[in-house]
Image 1 (tube, one colour):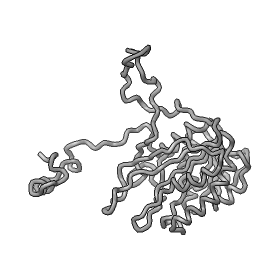
Image 2 (cartoon, one colour; image 1 turned 180 degrees about the vertical axis):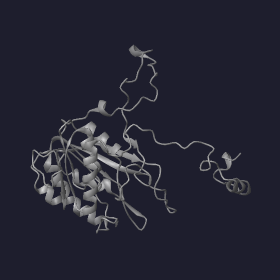
Image 3 (tube, one colour; image 1 turned 90 degrees about the horizontal axis):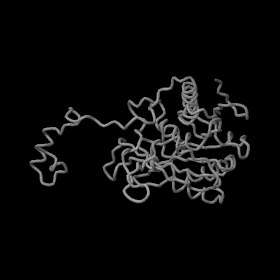
Image 4 (cartoon, one colour; image 1 turned 180 degrees about the horizontal axis):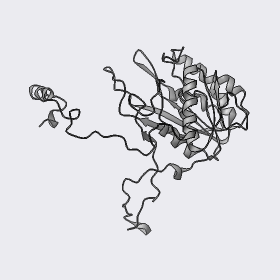
Length: 309
């Protein structure tokens, strides 16, 4: 498989090294079935030179109209964001994105999806952040949504109806249930099989679910902020075409490698249906330390007091 440095209609995979504005300027109107991306939050990460929420707003007022232009009728725009944080004060970036895209009458918000993860940075001054938000917009009301492609196992497959004409009959869908708008995937950190040198990755499982549900085989998927190439790799795994842009030379190389590996079937990634790990009880990591037990006995109102034997 060839990954081309520039986009042309018959090229299945293109990864531009440069500013996404230059890539978008060369894409025709109504050419993209799905945009799936996670842009820089302007919080001073190693790949950013902007640090203010106002920078995020300014950039998006330029980029999002172009995304709307290139999205075909019935296509989708999925923007995954967290928060801009400055001196402990938060700006919800999904609100910024919604505010801009809501100005386009043909753009409709379909879901505000929460991606939750169990681990991350600790903060002594507020509740620790353990989620980000994926906004799913469509261009028009006649859009693709393949629920059967992304169903998850039923929690109670033997559940039966208790009244009416379906009383006593199995009430669940044998293909599985709707995964809902809260998705629990481990953050891509530490020993995660997808971890690269990029500091901020979203998981392949998240991208796979979006692409399978909102596109069909051969559709064009766009990621204007490709980063480590997760969207491109997922597009390859799902049999879709891909076009993306990445400014940073090293991340561009990582993205290119991951897309090629996905196409070749050698990409290391966490499967979509793998359950979130639950540690076994009574190990050195999960057993309450003796020192904590002593502390619980000597203090009133110790948080774990009721659980201490």
